[in-house]
Image 1 (cartoon, helix red, strand yellow):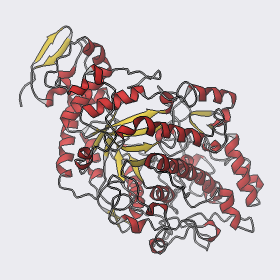
Image 2 (cartoon, rainbow, N blue to C red):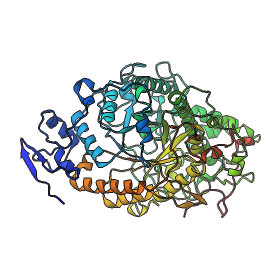
Image 3 (spheres, rainbow, N blue to C red):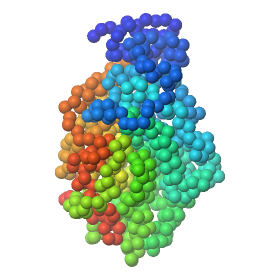
Image 4 (cartoon, rainbow, N blue to C red):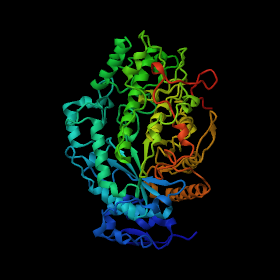
Length: 629
């Protein structure tokens, strides 16, 4: 291998080796610093001190007069037709744009993109924050910096995936006007039992309440999506092929049960987030419907606090109250609220972004207090969507024979979708305390236990709305994690993928942590190409990888070398794959462009009588829950 010979001058190190292998050292390295940093490149690059002669050739469209200009309307068929079998995306760092809607390090970003393109990365994943776009005043949107960013991505030869982020981060807050509304009415935020607020996302309990300057949160999300389509329409279907719709904190569908502040630390079970007045109001109404008003006063009193372990609580231990009639009632309600939120937001996204707008048919479960009306006695037996008539909670997969008999037209997805973009949703990785109760999943809103499958409801929501799922944590190994916390990331990922396969929901993967060691990369590669059989269901090929993320450590020489080799291996293996179409870009071969998909989407449009999903035990002593080895 040719040796990299550095040329030093003006405090900057570059190299004369015309090979992308040595790209990181060619970009920039300030004297006195022992690692590459994107942020430090910015000031140097602006002075013309960084020598990157292999990468300085730019298209005419990159000139100053062209920055930020968008292409003419229309789908770029070349990009669509040439999309690789297994596209590889890299996320941009979250601080590319400041809360003031300005670039933090534009030139460094350009250099980083050139490096990734030379490496063979196909696309860039961009977080689009509500707090930046509508940050100053309600219904005043500023897309100028994002237009410039997407123009840069396009000009560097990438396709793009947009993540519509309706949450706050450590560096990007929610819109300033919304924060003011929150000061006047803090109940718009999720609240724990002690009354502490999680201000990163608006409580789903207020989804249909006009608490945000006269609009409901759902109306706000709709308005942002409409503005996105209007302002970035020329890029949709050409540069932007995928849109991930944020559904909660960190863009994932979950309650903020495990906040990153000092309230929680791993491997605590987390806390239920149902104590704002809007959530308690709905909980009380549900309890009244089942003639158990005391159940609607608050969440479980014996669920402990954020940092406790399951055996230290009365609710989550092996024979805890999670299995009692009250526990089943509460967990069903808590999960149903989350599923309704996902269905509402994704329905809006489908109508606004895929257009023309069509009437949206909801997920098939009514508000929880309506679903529970079928129980005349008021004695809740805890039977949820996966329950049998004998009162045993089976969970598990909806009977595919029953689904197949629903007949054509039962799903709104039977209508063809316009050939524009694909929609995605992200689920969390809650892999610790994988015991009977699955406590971290319960507090986050997934009613997933040893006797019921908590991912079937959300996969059904995604299937009905024509949305792919992005799963996280493919690089994790249980043997590397907390030995006493029953960590099982491989089992959880297999469970999620199995349910997605049962409903023909396409799957994309994303790594959970910024790791560049060979062990993590090898495990991620294995997860990408895992097509094993679980519960009699063969896992389809994963359809995309989003690598999280382009950061300083990526460009450290050792990490870059390992990442480069990882990309090479994945690309070589992907060339041998034959993967069905991965979305609505073609528009006429099933909802996901998937030959086998239409039959899977003939699902029941609503639960059976009494609000219960019909389930069939898969054999074994624990009913129909997916039993993963």
